[in-house]
Image 1 (cartoon, each protein chain N blue to C red):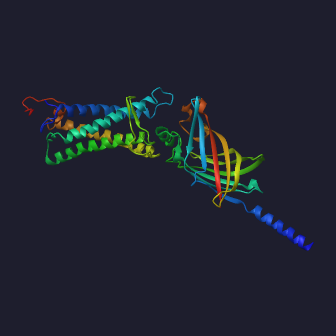
Image 2: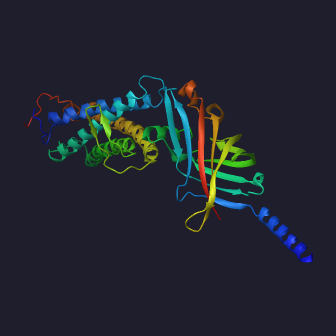
Amino acid sequence: MKLKLLFGALLLSLGVATSALAEDYVIDKKGQHAVIQFKIAHLGYSWLIGRFNDFEGTFSYDEKNPSASKINVTINTASVDTNHAARDKHLRSPDFFNVDKYPTATFTSKSFKELGDGKAKLTGTFTLNGVTRDITIDVKHVGHGDDPWGGYRRGFEGTTTLALADWNIPFAPKLGPASATVELYFSFEGVRQ
Amino acid sequence: MSLRNSNSRYGWVSIVIHWLMALAIFGMFGLGVWMVDLDYYDSWYHRSLWVHQSIGMLLLFLLLFRVVWRLTNPVPEIMGLWWEKLIALWVHRGHYIIMAALMISGYLITTAYGRGVDIFGWFEFPALLPADKGRETTLGFWHMLLAWGFMAYIAMHAAAALKHHFIDRDITLLRMLGINRKGENDET
C-alpha cells in the first residue's frame, strides 16, 4: 500500500514535471525544412507564388498543454523572392515592402487553440511595413518524432489570408481588384533543443 | 574629313558616336525616370523596361567599340592652359568610366537571376556573371544615382564646350560638330 502510494506520487510528480517542461524547438533554417510562401492573383488570370528565403524562429509545444504553445518568427523582408529580378527589386522598394525602412517582419503568438483532428488556431501579432495587427492562422500538425540523426523534430503548416490594404503597401491598389488579398502559407520543421 | 581622328580633328566615326550616344543617353534617362512610375496597367509598363534594357545593351556594345576606337586613334589636341587640358582629359575619361559603370550596372541588374538580356527580340545576350539574388536592388540604387550624376556631369561638360566656343572662341565645339572654320587647316 505504502509502496503503491509512493509509486503513485512518483508517477504524478513525473507527469507534472513533463507537463511543466514545454518542448522548445528551433525552426530548421540550416536544413531549409521550412518555408514561408505567399500566393497572390495576377490580374485574376493566374497565381503568382513567392517566398521569403531568409527567416528564423523558435516555437515551444507541449503535447500535454498545447494552449501554452508559443512561436516567434522574424522574416528578413529583403529576402523576398518571386524568381524575377525586376519584380523582386520592385517588391523591396517603398512601393511594397520598403525593406530599407522595415528590414524585418515579425510574428509573435498570443494564443494557440487545438481544434482536434490535428488542427489548431493560432493568433498573434504580425508586424509588416511598420503596421502591427493581430492575425489568425489556421494551423495543422504535420508530424513529429525522432529523426535519423539523433534529434527530435516536429512540424506544422499554416495558412492565413491578408488584405493588402491593411499593410501599408502603396502599390497595392494598382495591382487591381483581383489582387486585393494574399494567401500566406508556411511549413516549419522545428528541431527540439 | 576622314573617318579616323587626326591630331587636330575628330573623324566622322567619333563625331557620329558622340552625338548618337548623347541623344540615346538623354532619351534613356527620360525613359528611365518615366518608366519607374508607370501604372501597372499601363500598356508601357513592361515594354518601357524592355526598350530601356535593349537600348542599354546596344549602348554598352557601342561604348566598347568607342573605347577601342579612341585607343587606336589619335586624340585631337585639347585647347587651353595646361591645367585646363589636364582637367579636360580627365573629364573626358570620366565620361567613359561613368558610362561603363552605368551600363554595366544596368546589365547586372537585368541578369541578377542568371538570365540573359533580350535585345529587341533580335537576340539574347547571356548573363556572364552567376546569379546573385539581391544585387538588383543594391545596384538599382547605384544605377539611379549614376544616372542623375551623369546628367549633372554632362551639363558641366556642355557648359565647358560652350565656354570654349563663346569665350575662348576656339574650335573645340565646332570640330565635334564636324564643322570646319574657314582658314582652318584640315590635316586630312
